[in-house]
Length: 313
Image (cartoon, rainbow, N blue to C red; front, side, top):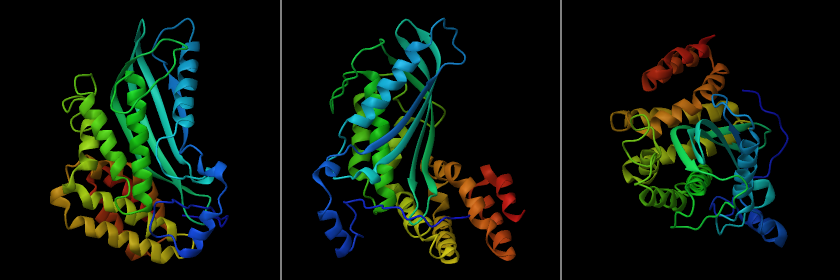
């Protein structure tokens, strides 16, 4: 994987890995930057399968959702402008009945890699069971622990997941408070379509995603997010061979607990997110390493076994 050398500032203020020099620099940040909102979201709303004479409402909904996310303060953390969490939501509306919308949603969180212009995808997830009411130009209101609006509650769920996932990639289990918030939202919404453990496709739903992220049984999969990004990707520009070696060790340690995790949503989602990146990482390895890792990855992630053959190309 090619990395350019343009430096990127990444200073998550809650992370204990910052040294004294960085803490001093952090103290010099201007008050305006300390008050900045945490999220830089991109929201897209489409309805290609819905017959509509005027699709302006989709643009209005898209703009309102993006502004709702980006202008709200979601944490007590002091997150500077260059540290904003990058979240994207792609909402595909498949049916509209008066003010009732239903469809699917694609959720993705990315973050920069240290000393690089490359951005790594931390997590991506397809939500197959989305429904909400929306009247054009209505104010999107939200209050924690209260469902004021099905749509804003849905957005808040994914925002808290995004914050938690980003924080987990910088500090060990640092996203826990935000995963707890996401699970509280699920508990509040269980009577609504799309929020129950039986909704969606098998375990691929909002219920199990929040459950897995809060379940101590899957702690090692949470730590995988930190170790992969901090000990692997963030070292890639400085020492790609060592970074690749670290990633190999991290993934092989996962093999030891494969029997426990193999049917978990978190493991499935990790590999569905990371397989393209893993292919590129190991393309730069030696021939024996390419062969060994293509075989190993195919065993631990059989769903993408044919894709891992590209490592040997």
